[in-house]
Image (cartoon, rainbow over all chains, first blue to last red; front, side):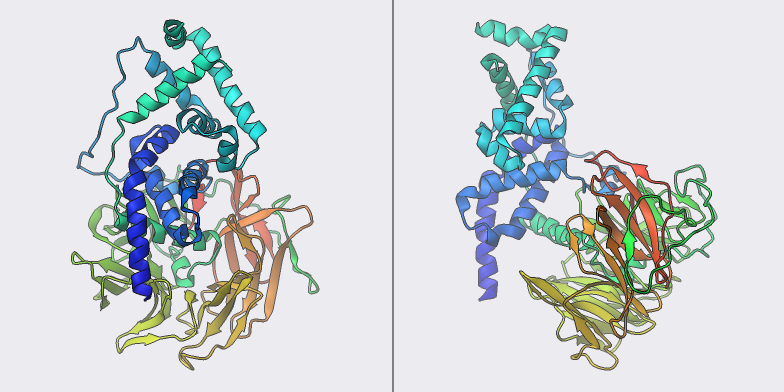
Length: 178
Length: 400
């Protein structure tokens, strides 16, 4: 009986994992800026979700729950110190390069800007402008007030604006749209 | 806010993440990570096996080569140790303010990935979470590039001589003479190894692929306390005569080969948990004593005392007591002051009388190591280190 319960849980979890993994990886990449760190983050978030699977009664809340885990984990104080040291190996890891597009440097400059944001501000930006969550949903996931979400987003955009003055290429797309 | 700015940002985030592909993460990977997380949670709460915590590098070990005496470690000459004596009528106040400076820690610890021993700082070619002398060299537990645990053998110069998949725990007897770990074989079966630290022939037991086996410590030199990792864990002793189940435990945290005592958890509910001490030589079904007031963390190297706590959260212990291991009677207690918020992470026995803890105020930006003991001493043993709030622990003991 218990074994059948575990098998059922595993099947259900595996189906969720298969469906959501690519999307979670994209979010994780935007949060971390590194593909390997993103994979690590997704795996950890899924592991924590697995441990809590039976407690999450409302399946429609799963995405929000796992996003919260990812953001918290990425901001976490308890990142393990031994992850700092990489194992030396002769094997060359698989690597999928992410190429900048030929856009006069705007893309690279914007991405560079995102990577300079403090972790929590970056999480606000990713959840608001990539995940397209509302301010309330973002606040819920980050465990902060709606006011803080507004101020963090506003601060990030203000920083971006300041960069525009320093790097006019950031404004070119806007110019084209106009 | 300017919509064009937001649109540009949104487009960039979409474009930037669009091409990202990675290795598919399988259920097996997730389950393995889940087990690791469960273990970390226990450790963050201080609930870690005694013998596992006893992965101390004996101070008598002669570290003859490769010592980097310029590397960070116990960074200042200690001033004479001053202790705060426990008042007979009450607990010692747990605070990090104005602590006296004690002697340097007499057991090894990792500092930013390097092993700081009382004799110097050692670097290893891989990132380790635990290590102890073995044969002419060292044995250590670390992770490969994919995050899977491996047990590494090193020669005296700390070159890797062997590596095998393992279950993430290296248990070592308090005197460092016996080491227990699990090797995951190619067919998935598990071999529990009890290896003399002098490198002589080990004794092994074979287990099926599931459930995962975790060594906890030693009941005697030839008897390894282990538990299974499953919904209803089994705690047992592996001896040359076979396996013996200890009834009544749902988890085990500690064993001691001097006294043969075992500590563990007997129940858990939303309102709390109960813990007990057993002497398996006398009975494998009855407890010496039990408590629902304290959680039992780790037996001392001589087996006479046990670290216990009444309060802990995700950041660590909020108080720490030392109890008599045979009776449960309190020896000394350390508790928060009215305005003090100290968390104790990684609580380990330095010797049979003193405990070392990695301590931080609640901001998590400043870390230090403190020594507490059976007489109620409280002193700082290294200089505090400032950390960024989101960074890692600066120190950890070679445990898990």
